Image 1 (tube, rainbow, N blue to C red):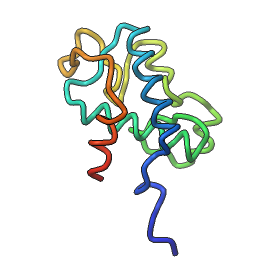
Image 2: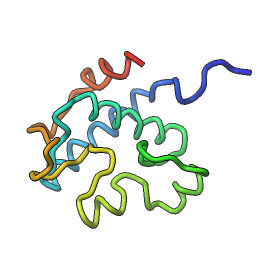
Image 3: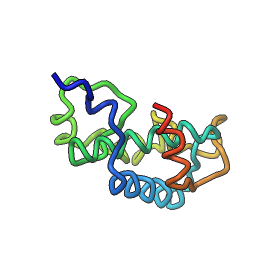
Length: 121
């Protein structure tokens, strides 16, 4: 058995950069902000990128799924998920509205910042 599980591997640089860029663009377009703790932002973006690598779509990384492939096909939890698109509710705390007490003041995060956090795992 392979001792390295997909959960322990980092996302590819290509997917990580795509999800980082998407997150910045989406935050600016929707008037939302990243969490005041950049570690939260980094881990969520890494999770989206890993799902993009593994499943072909940025499935929300903050939920448990019995069947990830079925969830990707249903598209409800593909980022931006339906609750985010319809009500600006982000379970992952990636896109936070002005009134959220955990909202920071940034809509940008560098590739290096994301990797610095995710290299610790």
